[in-house]
Image 1 (cartoon, rainbow, N blue to C red):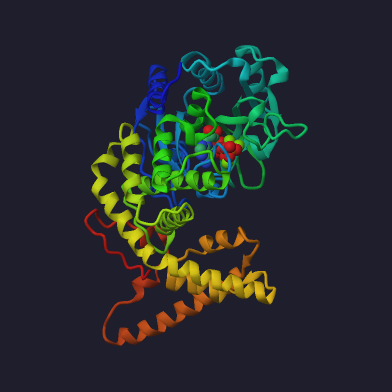
Image 2 (image 1 turned 90 degrees about the vertical axis):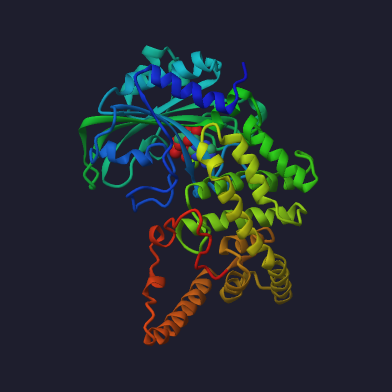
Length: 470
Ligand code: ATP
Ligand code: MG
Ligand code: MG
Ligand code: MG
């Protein structure tokens, strides 16, 4: 049977509730009391205080479907079948309660019995030295030894400096030869889209003292994460996360705006997928109170919006389209995230304002950039001067990585050091100018604050004015 995304989310949460878990609502994308993270990137991230013992969890078994942003995956978006900057992570968590036996058995039960995936297409991996997990898969679940992969630290050990850490066990699904890279040795763990990683089970059992000495933790934890979109890809047997039911509707809307059809031109498809992804990220970020600015998470949002707008141009979309697209995001996801519907008007407003701002300068900026390209070509230069990149940023609102992406397509790079120097120079100038103003009694120091969590702090849904100069 084919389950929809919204159905799968519910099935997961229901299943773990039946195993004694407390279902908690997704936390905001904006981390709470956590300076180490710009945006929530996993189900575990907002639960950290429960894992470290800093706070008492409402129950020792918790399950969530957490909205996540991973800008680190941005280069992959549109190009692989499985990466979005935005996705939902399903997870079950044990705070010193159950451990490996239950976690493994339940993940298997959910995938094969509840969802009904073909067991012969599923492959678990374990950390090289984790014989315990290997034996559970082999002897308790009954997976033949040759179907269980042992990987090293890089893939199967979860660790962030000193502190709690541990091995993990991932579950891959073989989507068949047609998705393979065809290279010899393509198997579980290959970076192509054939053996797609669906679920990661992390067994937090050690404490790293920071010098590589590991001791067993008193309280062992379970932290798991499965991409909801990826689960839907394998359940619905579709090509990519952009083909699952809820996202397909959005993708089609992008095609409508571009007066084009999906799968007629690979280059266009990349842009279509990219816009589809970025508008999801942007919509959810705004619903959590993030505003487009020039710093921190506000800048992440601005980059996503502007990158989507530029790819809209590539597809031949001339007017504004992002706020209308976000209506489709909201329609598809409001079941799981009622806040989207509640903040609908606000989301539209922010997107419209940001798009308006960028639309004023984008065409001019693109034409200036193409002038710069011609000049480089005439001079046989391969690197754009930092000052030029800064002009595009400062005057035309082109985030550096947008300029970079445009140039990379044509084999050029940017002098990023030069860009930073130009930025610094301008900051110094601005600071000096403000010192003059300070004579008049104005307090300017607030603008020097670059802590992202401070400068992009949410100021209220009615307030649409922000201090950025772009
Ligand atoms: P991959 O190797 O495919 O990049 P990962 O190992 O980085 O995935 P984890 O950090 O283990 O992913 O996250 C847990 C789960 O979240 C993954 O097994 C996958 O199902 C899902 N996931 C991770 N990154 C993304 C993404 N960018 N888009 C969609 N789903 C993702
Ligand atoms: Mg990854
Ligand atoms: Mg991986
Ligand atoms: Mg993983």
